[in-house]
Image 1 (cartoon, helix red, strand yellow):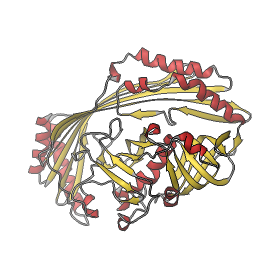
Image 2: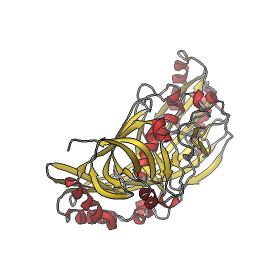
Image 3: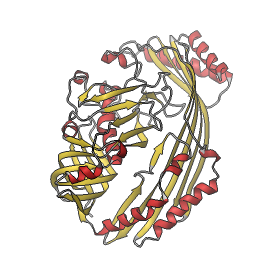
Image 4: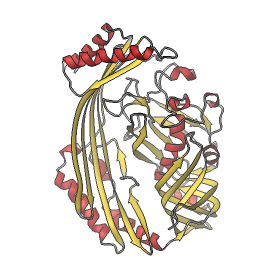
Length: 483
């Protein structure tokens, strides 16, 4: 591939670029879904293309193509420079990039089993067996199960001397069941909602998760919820399971920390952020027990890689340390705006045809020191909620409401009854400052978010959020749905 990358960079420089980079990406993907005992979706996809990004006359230009030939590389590089020069006529200031040393490297996701080498019959057979076991439970009307696998083979080069090859794998699996009766419908999902659990692993992920062992429990919980009492409208202590807490981290810590949102460049679609620069190092974002780490090196994380799409080496740092907000998610262009000499390596693009944007890396709430049993027994009155059902948060990431699939009423340190349609609401800083207990590392799971949307045209990104169950004091809870 180096002959193509060299040609692209040389052409861009000849045409007037002061900086250029190229990404060549070959993607292979597979998605399988089964519904009520039949294959409902089977999709395989191969994709190859490249994108060239340049700075000319102090402005960005970008162009791309799915035709990887020498002639097309030259044409696209020249076009990117032409676009940059046109954009320069409207620039407010020159683009300046934070420094990054050149990297020449090869990085691959460590996997044990290539999912594309596992027979299709084996994959479908497992999904059908899940359906079969779920539909045996009286009251279950719909059972869905699915798997998804992706391999990205990426080449990055820039005019500063970097040439990086990366091969990244993603795998995912999950199922949902729907119970109908008593004039309502209830859903339960495993191991998480919205198609399940995703990680940067091979087929070993599917074998590690106890899928069949939990089908009966999940189905019976869905049926149980048909007769369950609605979640009461009260202000009480709230315990969130790890999978729900992962989404809470995503929406109320991850997105506000994206520096492009803070600076207003995503305001039209994704919104802005309340985390303006004067709050860096000063805002008590959360209680002192809360430590939140961004990490693009953690094994299994969906945002784990050797380098981001600007060629910046993977890093680990705190966003929140002992409750204080101390770090942003940055790019080479935005890092200088908050006085940092290097990017945090958060720029990623949804394939070769899109420009990189600041995207969350893997962001995790560090574990505490108690068990879930101890946390529940220490809660005199409260509600335990698990598995996300829906979410809503405003454009500045302040006011939010989340609903979950299942709740449990806690009284005198015991779970005493199930609750259906539970929800909770709050404001970001007040909520995180109410956190007074976090379960230990035995409960910690790195939960995958597979479909984060941002940008215009829209882009999808993957990232993971590690969390153990945690407790929040005096939270308003209530009913998300009328039935």
